[in-house]
Length: 128
Image 1 (cartoon, rainbow, N blue to C red):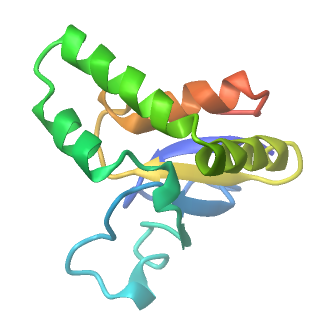
Image 2 (cartoon, rainbow, N blue to C red):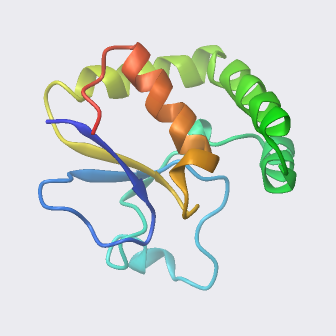
């Protein structure tokens, strides 16, 4: 019963479970009542999204050093008590139920969800 790391808006996988949107903003132009039906997310968890300032920095990343600076800053944000506790909870839940964590970015390698994957794995989560 793992944590799936997904792109929000992509078709759901079989047995994916509850889909969590770890994004700063809800999808534009989509009524709230349709978020789940359109495969965005079932629950919004902006606590696991980069801060507004870091989102802007991530969008401006042009090279490996800038990406590494973003990763370092995002990990520091996720080390704050509330975010860290949420990651601990998701890691524990991964051993009892399936769930998905996602963002809108197309490429996981250049998205904060790659960092979330790493942080969840470090906490012993079962991650796909």
